[in-house]
Amino acid sequence: MRRFAPMILAAFALLAGACEKKTQPAPSGQGAPGGQAAQQAAGGGTPAAGDTIVLGEVGSLTGAQATFGVSTRNGVDLAIKEANEAGGVKGKKLKVIVYDDQGKPEEAAQAVTRLITQDKVVLILGEVASSNSLAMAEKAQAAGVPMITPSSTNPSVTQKGEYIFRVCFIDPFQGFVMAKFARENLKADRVAILQDNKSAYSIGLTDVFTAKFKEMGGAIVTTQSYSQGDTNFRAQLTAIKKVKPQAIYVPGYYNDVGIVARQAREMGVTVPLMGGDGWDSEKLFELAGNSLDGSYFSNHYSPSNPEPKVQKFISDYKAAYGGVPDALAALGYDAAKVAIAALERAKDLSGPAVRDAIAQTKDFPGVAGTITLDQDRNAVKSAAILQIENGTTKFVTTINP
Ligand code: PHE
Image 1: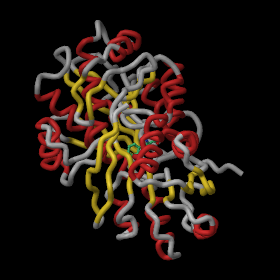
Image 2: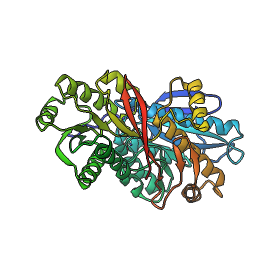
Image 3: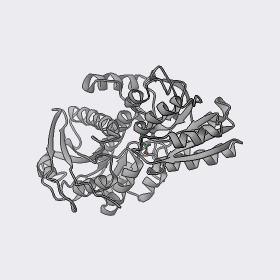
Image 4: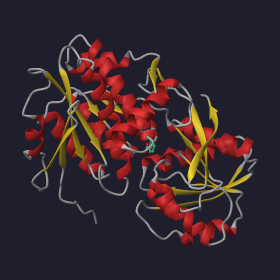
């Protein structure tokens, strides 16, 4: 049985530069988008009318993966503020309307419909989780409104059509990176996998990792599954323990992985865990305690990168929002920067013109790597491997495509 949660979308109008945030819960209800909150938050304006250009953003500001949405929103906000302080785009100020999808694909799709039909945004930023971006991309593509996902890595997201872009690498690369690291650096021959069977991201990474690790001469000794939000992983861990792997690949999101790690250690499973970008959250360590010490994950950026533009981003971010920006914040910032540069270049603010301008993105200096969009509208970038030690991450190596 499928339950539909009542749609409760919170609208946040980020009036950049003034750092003003309005929270306006929409009237709850099911079905077609049509609440008033977005309209009010947007000031009822059309995208290019008057002196404001309106962009949309969808993210998990609440729910199980809330740090994904909040970090991304902060990164976007910082980029928009900087652009407005520098005079805006085409002489107009930028404004972003942000909707909370609570981490749910149905809510993400509804939010996009609302951004398009009601708020009439020129472009949409989001989501983080690939399953949510897939639901959004469907709508954005059908309406001809460009969408840039900062951080969704499943290949099928941008395959939805020519209006859908991303500024991060894709999972065929990310899965390869960890398989190579497991073989060459950890010298593992036998690896077990624990995948989230509710997540396009986790399923995709499992498939790639399995294929690559085998190609490199390794064996996958068991593949176990859970569903997002589960809290007891002991049956799967028992099955894994029995086949004595040298490492366990857990390509899930931090909220689940933190609990997996703790239960694994309680059960005497001591081998390193390995994961992907979905581990990236300070909350991971709150959940896992020290259970992940000696484990590894692949990610988009490392805050210890000494490059001046990265260090400037980190200090500006800390000053504005507190805390060291994670990869989501960095990619949110980069996605917004790419969007802003494209809006500036576009011959007008129509969907096709903005789309064409985004597609031309080349050698763009992002804080999470240089961005050139390929024919499939993906960025080709290197990945960082991070090691966990004492509840924090340490940069190990970069792997290039
Ligand atoms: N790549 C993940 C996905 O596609 C999302 C993610 C990106 C999570 C970066 C954390 C950091 O679902």
